Length: 154
Image (cartoon, rainbow, N blue to C red):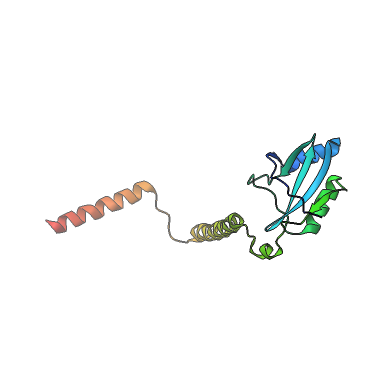
């Protein structure tokens, strides 16, 4: 049997819309298609192929684990689907990464470290036993100091 060559659908569908279509019974067929790096979902709605996309990135949603995808579809009430593994490449799974998430986590850790440092600085400042000088007193002290320095220069 020749593998089914599935053209990439031009219509896109996110999770919210897929969920609504599954609830309304508008889905005619569901295809799980192996890709380098994971599994994608194609849905036939009114004889038009749609591909499931990730909500944030807008890219084709890839599931690394087949079991995760099956559970996802079952949770939506989609119990029957066809699987096309002809273009699936399991060697690509280990190299599939989300650099955008790695950068976001790095920034989150840096922000948390800064918040901790800042809170420590504020706490130390509040506990400082040094005498508090009012603005007017500080201005008078610096004015006297400047006058003293000018006298030395002359």
